[in-house]
Image (cartoon, rainbow, N blue to C red; front, side, top):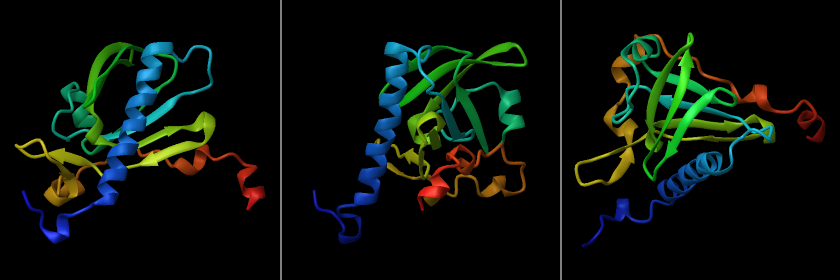
Length: 165
């Protein structure tokens, strides 16, 4: 099998996949050890319309583009696989299960240690090959729709970081 010269060695894609694995490993550590005795908590922003996202329709209507969830004190039944994670969260005291493919995540942040990753959304073709969802214009029609809450990562930076520069 030969490659097109333009497709060879896409290090940017390799790095992005490796960093998504960091997210998977962090979530797996929560499954294995919990967050109870730590200050760690996660802000996870994802595309609600990405293929494979499973969530109640009223939440998709409320967050038609992106949604940010927080995993800190009140989440249950976190399950992590190679390709996705599922978690039970409460919305207005109603427990709901969300299933989010790793490829749908656009931002992962752990403000307790001033750590954040920002991703380009990925999707999969019929052959299981991952590629940029932007190539599909995934949210082109969502431009008119209201976007979900986007968390500014600057708010997580410690004030003394400014003194260091």
